[in-house]
Length: 56
Image (cartoon, rainbow, N blue to C red; front, side):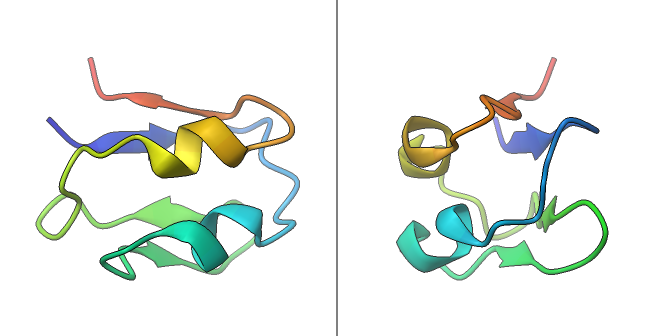
């Protein structure tokens, strides 16, 4: 199951720097590519706004 980023994202880039598969892309709200996300949770652990969570 991939992780997703919700609208509380402040686009700080912390998650992008930590993603081992480069699955996160920039934008007003960052996006995680579900096809390359390996569900490791590193991004969620470093997000300062807790905007990243497992997809429902």
